[in-house]
Length: 428
Image 1 (cartoon, rainbow, N blue to C red):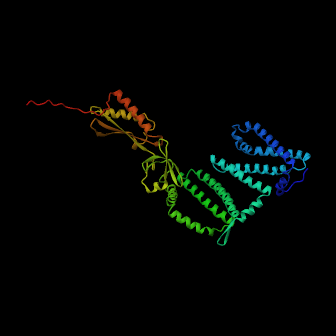
Image 2 (cartoon, one colour; image 1 turned 90 degrees about the vertical axis):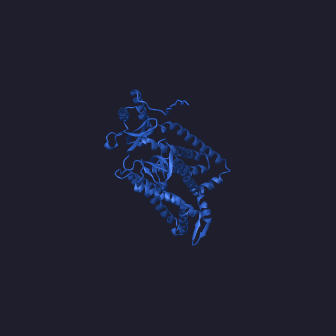
């Protein structure tokens, strides 16, 4: 059996063998191992794709690490056989730690998806992070990482008494990313705990969860920068410039963020409320830190800046209670029995399950609204508790019921008409 070769010498040995025919045999062994791993994963694919919720996470992990692990197993066996006939197996020795690190990195990155909410964009970040970390492992194993480190250290600049190099900035970025991931994980845990407290108002829970996330992210950056040797006092100039930018160019953005927290804390607008703002009527579906999402009854969504909900008049149709009044004007002829028309209109309202009948203050009523040119205008007023289900469908159902009853009772709904009197000419 060949003696183990130090990792930092693997690439050097491989370059020395590049002109040898032994390298071609090793490439052939790698190709056979890859083909065998592909065949095994191809046979296991029907089992891994079965809709069994019990082992979904385990099968997802096997799909990511199955190929490198199977190829690693085949490569270990192939390397043992190659040692018998080949003088050296430097390429195979290099491939073993690379495959092992690839499987470990892909499995670790895949496990992070259960910390965050499952999103489609997370798959792209998962794949990119896995290849980035594995690339760092590969550079370390092949011995190229110290050379790259030296080159990045050589690229530096001086800022006052502090020296910044490309390697230091890279370290800072890596530490900040790790710190942000930890902060987001803790924020997710806090959010789940707060959302589980059903005794607390939903808007207050959202405000506390967003505030906790913001504080944790700021703390993560403040802790990460000194950890890599960057003095926070260096950022004082940047902080001053940022303050001036917020005061001028980012004034609206900062105002919207502050307004978002005010809305969540004072609970004047809550998720599920029906509001009218800037001639837009709809249900509040989301309250974010910068904007509020307003979903109208026709399905369209409007992005309303939070500042507008603070600085403008907002009509909240369901602030104290969700009852909403729906008025339906009906015109009848002057010779109509108004008491009969009133009874028929109330019957049409009682046929609708959405109309409120258990609240004495919000019972259906018929008003004699106006003596118009072509007839008498009656108005049926009903109250509902579910305005989010829409009002036009309710109006249509009640109007259909009124029309059928009026037609059966012979009550006329007049149309515009004019009476013209012809006066006979007087004799002269």
